[in-house]
Amino acid sequence: MATTTRQTLHSIRQNWSIPPTDLHLIPPSFLAGLPPSHLSPTLLAAIHRLSTLTLGQRDRAYNLLNTYFQARMRERGSAAGQHDGGVLEVGDVEKACGSAKKMSCVGVMVEQQGRIDSVYTLDCVGNGGQGESVRDSIEESREAQAQAQAQGSLMQKRRVELAPIVTAQSCAPVMTVAGGEGEMAVLSSFTPLFRRLQNEFAGAGAGADAGGCLDGWERGDGQQQGFEGSEGETNVSAAQRAMHEFNARRLEMQGKKREYEDAVWRFEEARWRVENEGDEKMSLN
Image 1 (cartoon, rainbow, N blue to C red):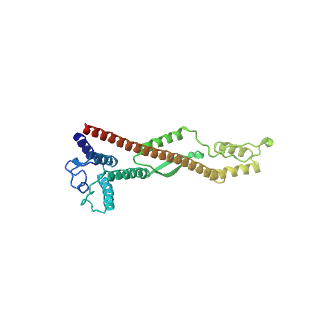
Image 2 (image 1 turned 90 degrees about the vertical axis):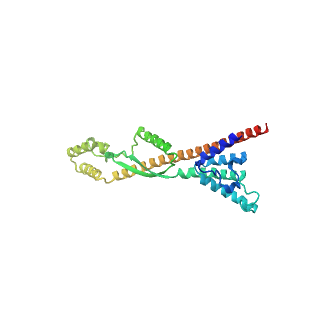
Image 3 (image 1 turned 135 degrees about the vertical axis):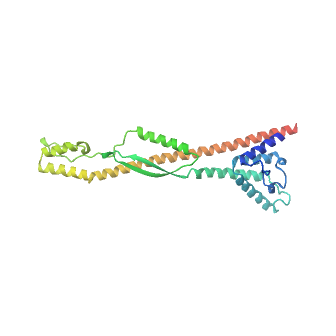
């Protein structure tokens, strides 16, 4: 049993990063002068559980213990460390463990909402191959940075593999040609052809209509501006869908992490309960 106590004390020192030169595992005011080696196994196990919930945060653990210790002293109407009951109890440590567990869950959510600016560049599919940058602010945790980067790579891969979205296609007005029949043409691909037809069929109505349409297209007037606006709206919608998918995955990851922390806490509690029962059986024998 002495070996188990020494192992527990050593584990607590490692969890709280207490240097060997520091002889006080717990502030003396909590123990009424008792050395840590004289603590009951149940109290020592509770302190060890608290150390696992506050790894590397010794001061934070002490503040939690002091909060619940002083609250119990006030309830009993006695000054801390001067009358009976002025020693740290298992109930004080258990309350500190519960508070540390809740604070750790909140801390994970806050850290996962740390702001990291990312720029997504979406190539607009249209005339001239021009691009548009859509800048958005993304919130993610430093702890989940690797997962977020992997997810971003997957989303980028999807955008590359998917066929381009046709956002705009324009047609010239119906032109009067031989036989009185009209023909539709995509200006971006057939502009030279329309120029040649304009010269060949130098009719007043047809030439004026075709020339006005071509001039307006080159200046960026008319329908082209409307098509560019619709292209921008389509790209913004795609960015919003990607952001929605990312946020859904981030919330799912937060839930999984909370489940993992709950499982770790239950495991530690069950393990120490089994060890305490084994120690009690050995002491009875």
